[in-house]
Image (cartoon, rainbow, N blue to C red; front, side, top):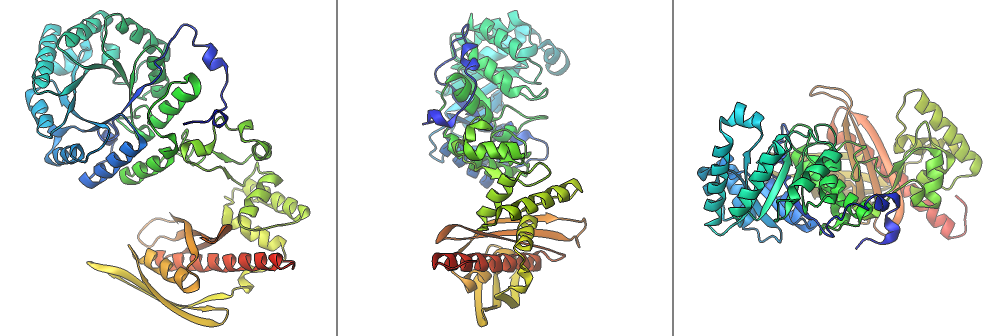
Amino acid sequence: MVAAQEVFVSELNKLALKEFTPPPQVRMFDTTLRDGEQTPNVALSVLDKLRIARALDELGVDAIEAGFPINSEGEREAVKRIAHEGLQADIVGLARADKRDIDACLGCDLGSLHIFLATSDIHLTHKLKLTREQVVEKAIWAIGYAKSHGVTVEWSCEDATRTEVDFLKRMHTVVQEAKADRINVPDTVGCMTPQAMSYLIRELRTVTKVPISVHCHNDFGLAVANTLAGIVAGAEQAHVTINGLGERAGNAALEEVALSLLAFYGVRTKVNTRKFAHTSKLVSKLTGVVVQPNKAIVGDNAFAHESGIHVHGVLREGSTYEPLTPELVGKERSFVVGKHTGAHSVENKLAEYGFELKSEQIHDITARVKHLAESGKRVDDAELIALAYDAEGRDPKAEQPIKLEEFTVFTGLNFTPTATVSLLVDGERRRHSESGVGPIDAALKAIRSAVSKTIVLREFKLDAITGGSDALCEVQVKLGDSEEERLLSLGKAVGPDIVTTSVDATVEALNRLYWRRLIQQRRANGGGP
């Protein structure tokens, strides 16, 4: 359930609905594994598809379009395995109005089929070479054949939004008579406006008695707006994808559609919005498609604030500059330092790492951050922490109670990566070995274990600075303490070897964590820093 205090949108949204009565609940038909996989340069393995299908099911979507079984043997295997996974969602296979396609879906033991055939004159003339009458006949046959096998059928008139409206109405009438369970209205090339989509759905509802779906593409950046317009006009199901993946410019993003329906119109779905961030990251990782930072709802910047005015407001009350709480979608609020940063942001960010500085020190650091940003330098957390140490008048390099003496990593084909490290911790020599999923994982585990079992890895970032196999890399490591949630530290290193650079960044982070913990202990005992 979503609490009223988690969404802060304009009341005008509801006032504008006077002539519309949207359905109280909308089905979410996720096509990430079908249309989403048609994103250029995306190819998912069977196991990848299974992982995403499970995540979508946990998210709470009503239907998962698992794939296009006729496409390949691997696709059929993936669809069949998903169908046998025991998921709560309806598992759907895509098929053209062709016996081979339908048989391929039936062979995957699916209970639901999504059958399509183009109906626009553009497609009939230039692609299919069919008359309208032939299209009608093929549609009636395909639906009848599929229904004779006891499955649920959703029908799509491909390129519906460029189909002559009277013929589209006729198609809706005949496929209903053929016992289609739902009819989808695809905006195949994303060529509609929200007003036009609203008009079309209202027109189609005059002849359509079964539930209507909308499937919108984002060629003009209107996929979500068109989906919302279709639903407000009476469509009861939305075709969506995680992160808006899909052909060309993509499809309507599930996270944006579901949250907009709830926030603006009070229309509910079954999805658990608090799992959006997790699902988005999983799909991005497995598809290799990076989510743009300013992506709505799940982008890295969706709840990030740099402007001093905004930070000041958000620190007092989140709704001043956020229309919904980050927790509602599984995200966390963050404050970024840069050209527009104010003292409140700097103070809050440094407090995350345990710094308690005087007002004049905070203002000095803020001024230096602005100067660095204006000169073109990206001021990340590691740079900010370095400025904080300088403001305190301390040289962090001179205060290293943890020193790395040596480390070795063994890795290779059919061999579990294993690392051994030797550290000096306050003069005490400690050796430790750990295995991991890779050489970096093994090395970092060994180092953390040698110092303290309570140390946890909060974040690991790796960036290539130059190109080529000998590229310089930059590694940032954020560490925390399982016994003290607010205790954080950050280490940063640059070098040509990924493993060595990761080790250097980890040791730096450990020293800072050690120092912050020591300061906390002194303060707890009544002493100063």
